Length: 229
Image (cartoon, rainbow, N blue to C red; front, side, top):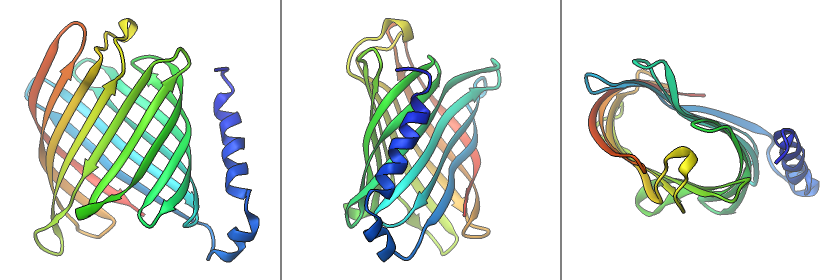
């Protein structure tokens, strides 16, 4: 894909949102929502990771434009382990489900442009689902699935289990990635909502990483904040 792919996709996504002006006039208006689901520090003694998972959308109930970014920075090594930015058009297809497509710019571990196809919504038992397939310019297919749930202990104290899977359809020598599940992360975060929009939290993560070179697993402590508006 050429370097102008993000600009081209942005124009296509804007056209998709405006493709049905009659329906847009029937909606209540254009809204936006920002959420930093994770701004956190993660460590197991030797490892020092700073992680982020941030999303922002603008649109109405039927059509939205999304920006998503996720990644981590290893403070002990001074390098980014993973970082990407997604620009997506989202179309509501059911009461609690959106179909999404667009483009991703991966900055680390390899600079690539990927096409994105995914679903985001609320599964039975109030399980939050965010899934995506990434198709790179050289035909590699990667996947990401995130599942989240919230348990209200009190009106302000909330326990949030979370699982994230990263997958690859085939071996990728340039990234030392092995086909199958390349990263598995399961964690618990206990947050206290000082305000609904601002909540510090602590927690624990179990992480397994599988590559062509090695297999690693570790248990890590977590502290961070969750912010939305």
